[in-house]
Length: 428
Image (cartoon, rainbow, N blue to C red; front, side, top):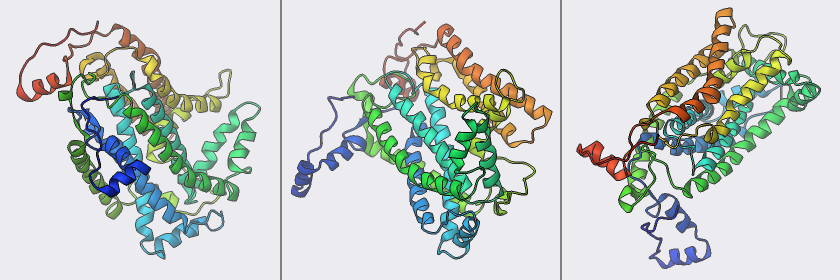
C-alpha cells in the first residue's frame, strides 16, 4: 500500500548516495522496516511473533550449519557423531541444545502467529496472499522439523520415521513405491539419513526465501491491526522505526530469556528419553510418539481405525494433510466482512473451543492408544473439521457483529482516553 505521508529515503552522506544509486539496498531497508514504512498505531504484542519467527529461523540456520560440519549422515555412526558433538566439540553441547530447543521455540512462535491470524482475521482480503504464503512456510517448517527429528538416529528417531513413512504405503497402487522413494530403501537406513540430512540442510534457506515473499506480499496492502479497520489517514499510523522496533526488542528479549532457560536449565524437557538410546531396528519402543509440535496431527492420523471404502491408514494420511490444507481455503470459507474477533462474539467463542480441541488432540497424540483415548481423538478430529467446514461458514453468514469504530485513531482514543465517539453501524 502506498502512503502519501510516508517519509522518503534521502541519503545525506556521499557514500550512501552513491550506494543508493548503484544498489538501493539502504532504501529497501528504510522502506521495509524504517521510518519510511508506516504501520497502524494500535498493534499489540501479538504482532511481535513475525519478528520472533525470523529470529528463530536465523538461530536454526546458524546452529544447523555449524552442527552439519560435525554430523555424519550414516546409520553406523550418526548416533555416535551426535555424542561426539555433545562431548568433544567446543561448545557442541550448547549448539545441539540450542538447535533442538530452537525448533520447539520456532514452532511455538509459529503456532501463536497462526492463532493471531485466526483471531484477528489476517487471512481476509486484501491479505489472502500473505496468508497463503504463510501456510506454505508452515508446511515447509513441518517437513524440515520431521526430517531433523530423524537425524539423531535414536530409538524414537528411527521408529518415528518407520511409522510415519509407513502410512504412505496405504495409498493404493503407488503407496509402497512412494515409501521406498522417501526412504531410499525398504526401511530407514543410510539412504534415508542422507536424503533427510540433505533436505533438512537445504529447506531452511527455501523457507527464508518464501519469508521474503511473505513480507513483500504484506507490504502491498500493509499490516492488519486488532480492530480490523483499514488505515484511512496519517494519524492512524506511526513509523515502524522507532516505535515498533522498540516494541519488537522487548519481545525478542523475552524470547531469549525463555530460550536461555530451556538451554541451560531444562535442555531435555521437550525431548524424549528414548532418543538417547541408539536406533535398534530389532527393538520397538513401547510407545512411539513424535515431537510435541506434531502431536495434534499425529492424533488425527491415529483416529481412523476402521476400513471404510478406503484403508483406515489411508484415511488417516488424507485427514492429516487435509487438516493443514484447510488453512489454504480459510479466506473463502469465512465470508464475514468483519475481520477482528473482538467484534465477532459468536466466532470468538467457537475459536476458544477450537483451541481446547487442538490441545485435546495434542494430549491424545502423546497418550497411549487406549479405547478411551482413541474415542477422544476421533471426537476431537470430528470437531476440528466441523469447525472449518460447518461451523465457520454458518457463523460467518448468521452472526451479527458488534459495532465497529470509524477509524483506528477513534478506537485508540476510546480505549486510552475513555471517550465515546460515534461508531459505524455493524455489518448485518
